[in-house]
Amino acid sequence: MGRMKKHRKCRFLSDEKVFKPLGIPMIDLVTFEIDPDEIEVMRICDLEGKSQIEAADRMKVSRGTIQRLLLSGRYKLIDALLNSRAIKLKNKY
Image 1 (cartoon, helix red, strand yellow):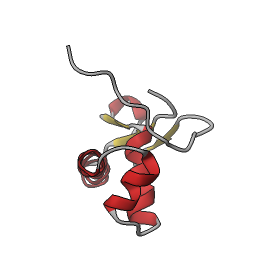
Image 2: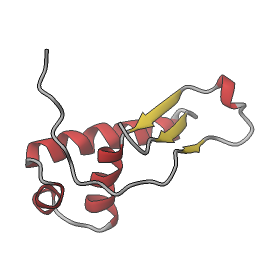
Image 3: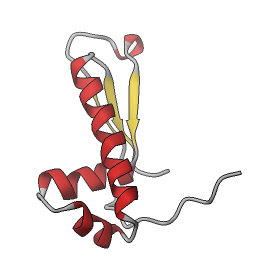
């Protein structure tokens, strides 16, 4: 059994959001779920232009965790955009 997930400081999304390609029914799409911590770290590093160290300080986790979250979130986002998949932004774990 792995360790329990450490609490991370993330913004709360009021509801789940789904983004999908035009013209393809949702039932025919593969959906990637992006976790709140992945959204938050991409927002801090990519949108605000902060470093991974600054993001780690803000979210109260290690820089290694930030790097792993960035890789995971960016992979899901880019794969969904390039391969016509749906993206679901989760508002909780």
